[in-house]
Image (cartoon, rainbow, N blue to C red; front, top):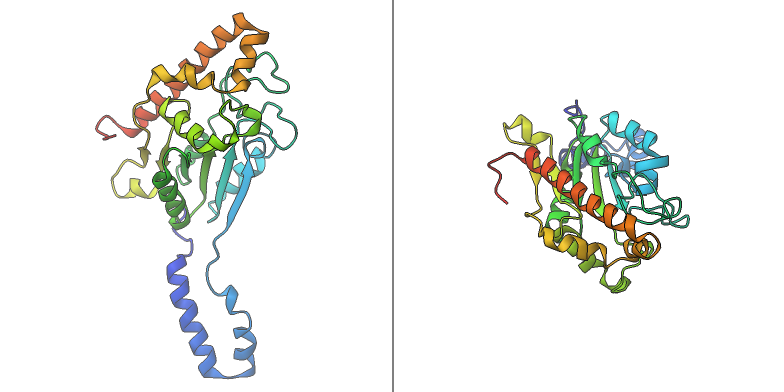
Length: 262
């Protein structure tokens, strides 16, 4: 599906040879062409957007771009809420989180954008959290750039709408705790590995410390405010949030295979 895509490194070599040939030619046409030499090399194309766009109101467009097989990269900054328009709930908002239009806590499971993109079989997909593992994040960026087809990177992004009790100065640590507690999971899906006879799915998260999960929720106002307003429902939804996180992690473990080392 993506084999026809232009190789970036090879295009640099070809571009250099073409420029040299045009300079040697010296004709008027050659001189005109050299003025456009910046277009000879393959360009790196990145699309940036938030979860409200990617998961929700712009999903149709995102899905269409990924489906074409075009060599573009998409980085989704996932704050799990419509940050720019006042903190409304989106399809990225998880169970129990309080947001506008979900004042009593969201009742349904968060959409798994990565799994939906993986279903094409030719889209590179990664889920990252810079504060949790910078090396994994950097690997994903490099692999997405090198992949000759569409790439999707979903990055966990602590947000002011989360009401982080330790303050916005601790966002990197918040991302680290999200992964450590099992709230967020790290993985990479590279379709090229399948052609090599390898499992294309790599689960980069270690087994979460599930005993930390509820404490993680209690560190953010978007969850603790539910305890104040709807205490009975909060207990039920917090339990559901942890069960959902475990269900998702176990789904990823199955994809990674029984012999995968963590």
